[in-house]
Each structure stands twice: as structure tokens, then as C-alpha cells.
Length: 296
Ligand code: ATR
Image (cartoon, rainbow, N blue to C red):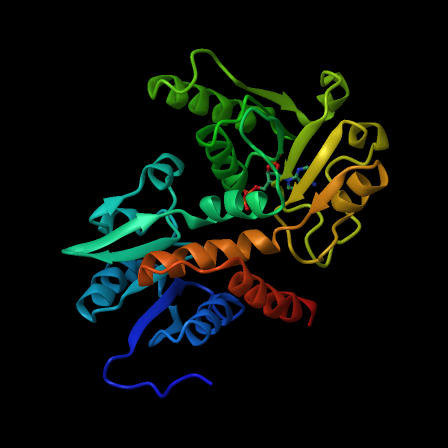
């Protein structure tokens, strides 16, 4: 049972608009209870023009940490003391950690995706990766893959210039940091998947296609494409099995949804705020609760 809230209770919360459907309170309040940490997590609905006041106010109110969600992931950045390298590359912060004088921003969506992949024994280092989509999520995924040592990344998008812009940006950024000596990321229009070299790829589905209630939609229908997929990771977690995942499995590959990414972005934020380590066993207990919550 959770302890009574008292004078020593620390508060964390979510800055968002809207916030009603968030699963973050479930993650953090479950972890606080499990680890017997005197912390409570609540949603804060923030009016869009009030974000600066909200971040400053949170700090003034001694809040331990915050998450930022749509539409604030970029808008919070100017009001932070410091921004972690991956978050800064991506230009999006979802976790604010209290430090002396202000909050430090992190992107645990992407470190969470990495940890979710690790938990499934998916190795990104030296992998040949395909990213489907070129929106905000796909761009962040591309930075994550590049930062964590992918050998080659192909980004496929319906609107080619958006994919090209991401590939150019990441090639430049990785070369500037000395991580790549040549361009390792390339862009292709979605329909050009037929021209992909015959290899086995890790494919990260980063579009919104297939999201509930449009559960029969998928970006690429052609079964031939899926013969090249060894692992398919869909960022979508509702439905639990997307059409993309079904097609990957039917062709003999492994498929995962985005629920563990959601779990681990929360776990990592919780660890940063409380300076603790969440065990795999504890994370799996929260995961079971998330599965239940997503089902209804
Ligand atoms: P987010 O910020 O969540 O990534 P977004 O920026 O709206 O969302 O990006 C959505 C992605 O899904 C884009 O890559 C989009 O392709 P376009 O850039 O061509 O618009 C992709 N997408 C959405 N609907 C699609 C569809 N029916 N077929 C193919 N791609 C689609």
C-alpha cells in the first residue's frame, strides 16, 4: 500500500495539452509504491502560451521533475538550465530533472526505445536499419540509431524531401561529431522499397499508420518487403499487434510494439528523478499494468 502523502512528499508531473489520456501517472505512482519512495506524479494541463510560466512555476514550487508531452517537447527547451546531448540533437525534451538553478532536459523517449530494444535483445550497433516515416518521431528515432552505433540507416517516406532533410541533417551531425566518416544515412521514397538491397533489416515503423482505430492500415502492404525484415519494431502500442507487426511475423520475422518504449521512457525518467535503479522485475510489474490499461 502507498504511504500517506505528508510533508516530505515530492511531486513530479506531466506538462501537456491534452493530458487526460496519459499513462504516465500509472507508471510513476506504481514505481513509487513499489520502491517505497515518497513521490507523487500528477498531470498538469498547461495553456499553450503559459509554458514558460509553467516551467518556472514548477521549479519555484520545488517540483522534483516533470515530463513534457505534446505540444511542449520543443517549447520547454528555452526554459531549461541544460539539455542532454541526445535531446539537444533531436530538439525535443520529454523529461525535466531538477538541478541547482533549474531543470536539465533529457529525451527518455529515445533512450527508452533503446532500452526497450535491449530488453528484447535487439542489437542496434552495426545494424542495417530501415526507418518508415519522416515526421518528428522518425527524426528522433534516426538520431537515436545514429547515436547508438547503427551501421547504415535508410529512411523511407511518402514525401521524399522530408526524409532527405533528415538524412542530410544526421549525416552532417554525425560527421561533425566524428562518429561517421562518410554518409551512413540515405533517403528513399516509400515506393522504392522494391529497390532495397537484399539484406535482413531491423525496421522501425515510425508513422502513425495503423494506429487505433485504423487497425487494418499499413504503410507497405507488399509481402515481398517483409521477406527482408528480420525484426520489425512498431512505435504504436494500440492495437497491441498492428498490421505491420502481423506482416512481419507472417514473413518469419520478430515483431514488437511500442509499449515497452512507453514503459522505459517512464522508468528512465523515474530513475533520473530519484537517483535509483529500477530492476527488470519491477519494470515488468509496471509493464503488466500498462498492458491492462491499454487493453481497455
Ligand atoms: P509524428 O510527429 O508523430 O512523427 P507526423 O510528423 O505527422 O507525426 O508524421 C507522420 C508520418 O507518417 C509522416 O512520415 C507521414 O508521411 P508524409 O511525410 O508523407 O506525410 C507518415 N504518414 C501518415 N499517413 C501516411 C500514409 N497514409 N501513408 C504513408 N505515410 C503516411
